[in-house]
Image (cartoon, rainbow over all chains, first blue to last red; front, side, top):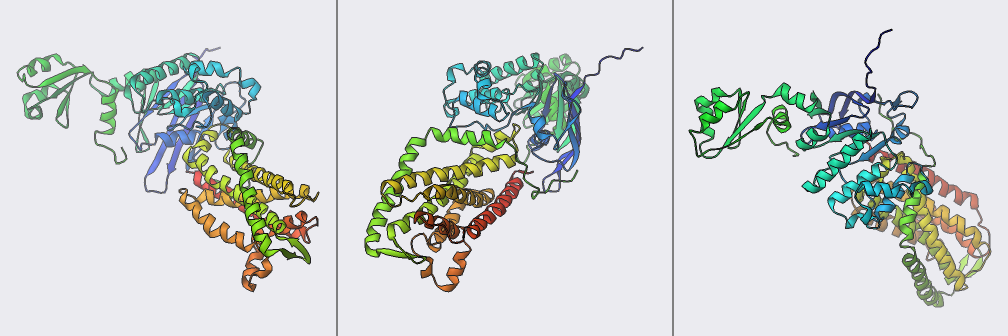
Length: 320
Length: 266
């Protein structure tokens, strides 16, 4: 008898999704991906790349023109499929949408109580659970405050606590940290890491590459509705980019493009007034740059942002 | 995969109840001040208009019976209040929850479908109408305008009137892009209906063509059902009037559901 290594069962399987909104181009174009149990999958891409449409398709809020969305929850018999099993699927999901949908007329406590009822839970069962949820969101002291009295970070954390009210298996988070200050963002990251340690699975869209790199075990890069790259963050960087970057800016930086220095880098990019040298070894280039003391340089490892800009281009998107 | 038709049959379950309860919990915080308004307005209305105009008009002929004007007015305006309360709630308040606060979007991330939300909003607006109606009935009893035991029958009938008008209003809610749109609904639809449905004066005063038009209006049938009950009589054609209200209810609920589905799909 052979022992195969355990294959991680996918929790969610999106297969060849296509969605068109009236216009000529597809919002989502033949997109397939999976989320394994316990995994955090990051979906990154410029505005209009199809991130929110993808989440909406996973939620059954938009019906794809083609393709399927299936869920295989452990312990649940059989495969659940959108839109047939929408309600059974949503019972297992937690959602934080891009804009808050908190109830402005209710306190934090009441927001969680009322939302739990939508899952068919009884108030008597919910009340004992709410203090722990508020504690998780660092909102115990705000239990009686209404969302209008909270900061942006507190509102996002309340949205996250609300998404946890049904103890979901999979969290779908659409830009959960957009608009937050660094402190609030770090607290959100820390909470999400706790959830991952508890074994929850997460699908996350974000514009912050440090967030994607920090939280996500795997990334999906979308542009114009298509998947243009998929993999672990460090592997993607290694696959698509040289390991080191030297940014050069200041008076005369642009002229470097016509200098012999260009040949010392594997790849050179110009963005505005800044020249980016991508290289496997930055030291010779740095030594040569010493001849231009008026230029300012930044030597750093290649990161996810470089990858993102390489794959999706540096031009501003119309709706960006 | 073929996209589902917006005209498919309603898929409702007990999922509407927590949505209804949510609205009830918000309203409970404001119920006492709103009760004051709900009692004060008909009180002023009936005292000023009913007694003032009533002194000029005296009695009104209704189906061969002489009726004091204030009773005539009270029985008509209770229907009008049911209509207005249901319409306000299903337009301005429902639109706030649907479009401005995105409350519906939040609910749909839980296992509650849009059909149940629309049903809950419809029943909620009807409940608000019943609340207004109850306040007015209390005023009417307190002022001894009517104390017919048949008022107990008028009460559920007025709930049905609230249901009818919340269904109609939800059609316009589904089409609205902003609050301004509702002004048209009130000034071009509800206000003329108020004057054509025999709330303030008998429909016999209306010229032929307008009278025929008024036969088609839902408020006319509401008044025709409720006014005899206030007079201690049974309506002459209860099945006709209930049938018309039921027809409006079923058709407009279906249309409202289809248009709301269209609004949320995509």
